[in-house]
Amino acid sequence: MNKPIRQPLNISTDLDINKWLNKQAEEYQLKFLLAHAVDGVIWGKFKDGKLLTADGVFGFLPKLRLFTLQQCRAFGERSEVMLWQTNEGFKARLIQDEKDTEFIPENQILWGTQVDKICGDFTLVSDGSQGLRHAVPLTDIEFDDKQKLYRPLRLSVHHYIDYDDSGVARIVLSRLVNLTTSKEIKK
Image 1 (cartoon, rainbow, N blue to C red):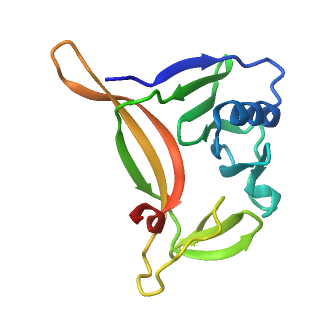
Image 2 (cartoon, helix red, strand yellow):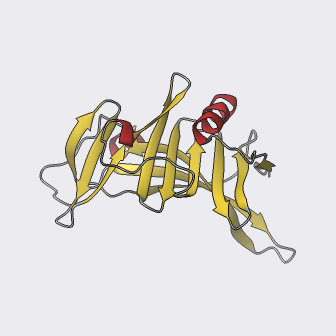
């Protein structure tokens, strides 16, 4: 069984997060960004060598800033780069699939039962009467008007397994792979 490549990445003390993420996206063919910050969730998309974030089209959403960032994951079909805040500063790591890497795939259901607005490469979706909203970097989301609680957004994840000396299997690592819709998964 091939295991994924897992290695730390170097972070400079004067980190320019956008430049650093753009470089990682180019090197590892990353497509999307999901960041968690003190002030909310930030989605992004790498397009033409540049990171686009939802705050660029919906001005009221959180911005990607180092001083509020808790963690972010830039991901694509073969790799994920994760950057996170520690007491000593930022740390980063790469997970990359090798040929024939074994994993358990999972498609996690994301919030969003209706479209509020489409702008640029992003769709602002909301969920239920609570008004929970986030702007995902997709624009072709099909909602089912007959099912008010239908949530078509999916976050694809790979879970990697390892075995201990007694043969017991456990998930030792997980990474984000893709952002899609349930319609695309059925194909």
